[in-house]
Length: 129
Image (cartoon, rainbow, N blue to C red; front, side):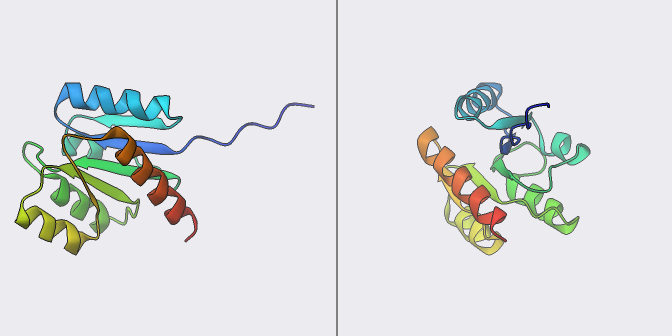
């Protein structure tokens, strides 16, 4: 009799245009047991498919072209409801827009433990819905 397959790990979808930050976040989340989809632009994420559950978006606010909050707005408008975290060094306007979108901010420079804890909490909360 075959062994039962283990549950798939939660997925973190990271969007950041800085290759060093993207690589660092990918590595940090993988070490913590997450599967990671890494994208270097908002458009790259929009062109792909997203999981429908057991996942969290980590979006850089300062992306070239479309910023992280606009990316989130477009995802929500097409029905993607994954929880999200915005990573940035926020100003008052970004804080206001993030609050209106209902998305928490983890400030750069990133504290990976804080970001990982936030992602775990959001995935857990979204799985309870």
